[in-house]
Image (tube, rainbow, N blue to C red; front, side, top):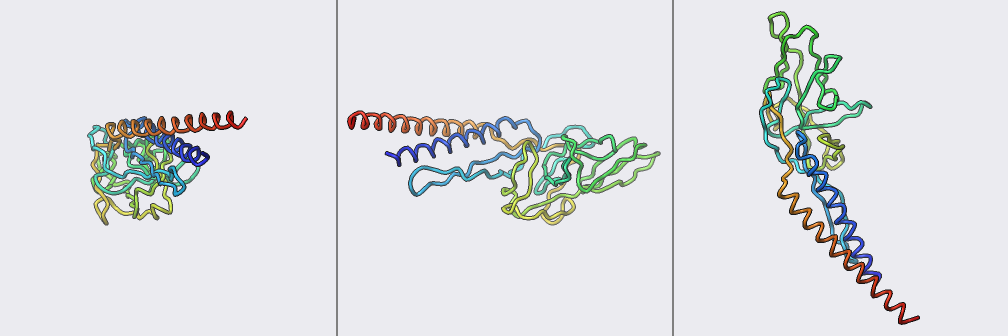
Length: 237
């Protein structure tokens, strides 16, 4: 009887975590550069299942034009590197950049692009090249003010989500390797565009149905085992 309780309880917990993961994916369907997570579940020898964690789906999202000269999508492998407010490093596929009050290129959350690129105060225009070159129009001339580099990982699926479209390296992902867009297996930049979320709504709907059914089935087992235990105790009494 205890085995039935334990097995059903583990299944209940696993189904609950699967629903949480899928709900987070669905809530980020409109988040640029978001990568869906997949639940990793294993069977337990004594019965039941165990939630092992999540794995990032590195599949390319759709690339759409924005008309914003400061936006850039990555077509192929790679991530933009950014510096977090506390000084830590993170990686993102969201290239909807802007210029902060200090003249630096930042992502949509205000994290500074790595390496840091500053736009002159007197610039009348800024453009991004497919090779990562950042140019500014100053006094009627075009000046190169920096170059965007990309980071790649041996196992991008091993990155851990920091929320939204930000990721951090892990032992599973390996160390980042930086390079220029279009070199060393890195993708090229698509200026004036962003990469949309790669969440598949239909796939999430199916996963939520399966997880909900698993939750209900395990809850029924727990109720049945509880009733049987009560009956046995009544008989013994």
